[in-house]
Image 1 (cartoon, rainbow, N blue to C red):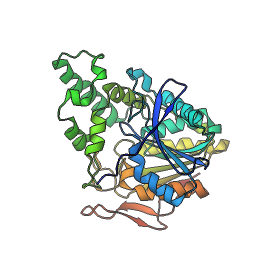
Image 2: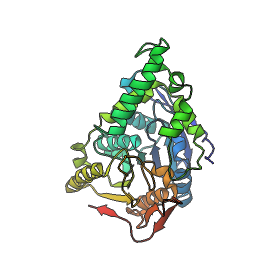
Image 3: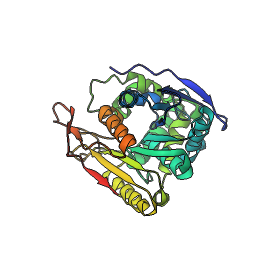
Image 4: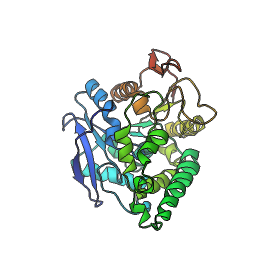
Length: 345
C-alpha cells in the first residue's frame, strides 16, 4: 500500500509562480527542505519525512512540489525548466514562507537543484544531503537516448502527430495520457519501477506522472541533461552527505567517482563531505536495477535514509550501518552495523 497523498499549502513566489508544499514540525524550528526527482512530487518524501520527524521532533520539515510538478505552477515553455531556474524558485519559496536558512535534501533532479542553491546562496544553506546524485548529468543514457529520444520525442511525439497535434505547440501542453491511453500502465512498467517493493501500489504516482504536461517531461529532462557542476563544486563550502545505491541505473559508480573528486577538492577551501554506499551488488549488465538498492533510495530504504539524514543533521556523520538487500528471493533491505562503506574528506 502507498501512503495517502499529503495535504498541500501554496506559496506565491516573487518569480510569478505558485509552489505547493507540505510541512510538518514547529514553524520556528530549524528547517529541512526536501526536493523531489523528475516527475515526482512532495509525496515521494512522505515516508522519509515521517521517519525524520520521529527522530527530530523539533525540526521543521518542508517538502516542495517543484515547478511543473504536483500542484505547483506548470510553465508551458520547456526552456523554463533549467536547474538554475528551479533553484531560484526554491530560494524565492524560502523568502515567501520566511525561511532564512535551511538544510536541503534532494533526490536525483532535486539533488542537482540543491547543489545550485548551495553554490549560489551558501549563506542560506546549513547542510546538504544529495541522494542518487551526480556532478555531471550530461550524456546520462537512460535520460538521453531512452527517455528523451525514444519516448518523449519518439513514441509520444509520433503518437500526437498521428492525431494531428503539432509539435512543439500544442503538443507540449498535452500529457503522456493524451499520447498513449495506456500511459499509466506504461509508467508502472517502465518508469515507476520498484524491484525491492514489488507489492507497492504505484497507481497514484503513475497517474500523476502520466498527467503532467509534456513541457514538464521534456523541459526538466533537458534541464537535467545540461547539468555540469564539476568545476563549481570544487569551491563548495557547505557540509555534504551523499547517499548512493549500487544499482543506480541513472547515475553510475563512475559518476560517483567524479562527484567524490569534486567534493574532495572543495575540502581545500573549507568544504567537508561524507559519501555513503547503499547496497552490495553491482548494476546488472542490462543496466536495470534487479536485486539490490538502486536509484529510488527514498522508497527502497526510507528508514535508513531518514536515519542517515537525522544523524548527519545532528552530528555531521551518517550512521555506520551498511544497508543492502539480503537475498534476491526476498529483496528485503537489512542492515549490518559498523560495516558501511563511507568515503570522508
